[in-house]
Image (cartoon, rainbow, N blue to C red; front, side, top):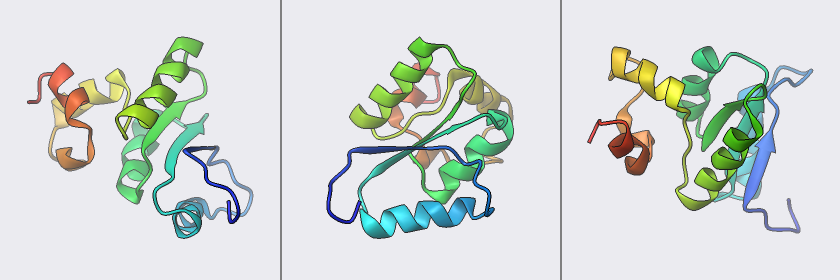
Length: 115
């Protein structure tokens, strides 16, 4: 990344050294405006909000259908943020307790009835 520009980094957080959040900071140091999509087998319900708060642009579980994966990549590239409908639904139930809504793209919030 030091010599090339990337629009998107798709990152698996299952790293052996346990420096998951440090990786995000390291990527941002190399290229401040790179979009980061976490692609993980870890439970989205547990980790998505944490990683969004840490500065990633989206979180996606590896067990999603291919059309959802494509949608997530396109949404991050075009809108800047992606969060799944399942997580947005859970957010409706527990809204404002877990993460500030300002980090979610307004287009997703409008679709889900928040705005």
